[in-house]
Length: 213
Image 1 (cartoon, rainbow, N blue to C red):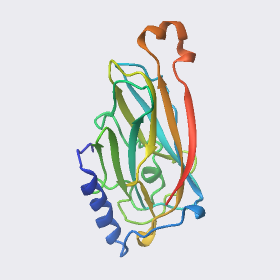
Image 2: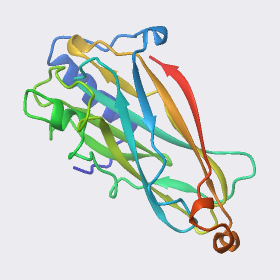
Image 3: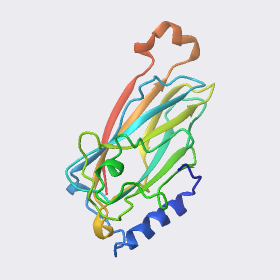
Image 4: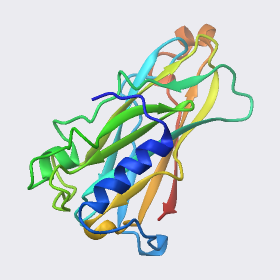
């Protein structure tokens, strides 16, 4: 399931899968977006020298045949250390995954789906095994992935998580489906301050929404 895979190869895998249904990936207009991808805050607060996880969710009313998530980490001004994607600890969260539970054709393709590291982020590629768009977001099938990130021992400050340019949602015929994304900024406190802040103060969250094709 967890395959180290360069960005170019992951995009090619999705393109080949789309070709199986007779289409090529074409652009959509962000203004038409009815689907939203949200990066949830982690259940366990981010802290230096730890691995933390959060869910990537989807909402909307349109069926999806495949998707690629290009998750990137951007340190903000004053941040120190590193936050790096952990492909081995990331997963499709199949209990509530959109394709695993919403597909009418058999779930996630083991041939074309993969999770790999890309730079300091993650590249996740998921394809319906039947190459058809039947999975509609809803209760029990609104998760695209559970992603894991490692904070270095000297990590401190604000780190923004966003979806990069390789992110795509695909419908039947290779049509790229427009979406909005709700991004996430996490604050990692200095180790000396952890005992003073308490659990409630460990996680400062900022969300920002943007549209993507």
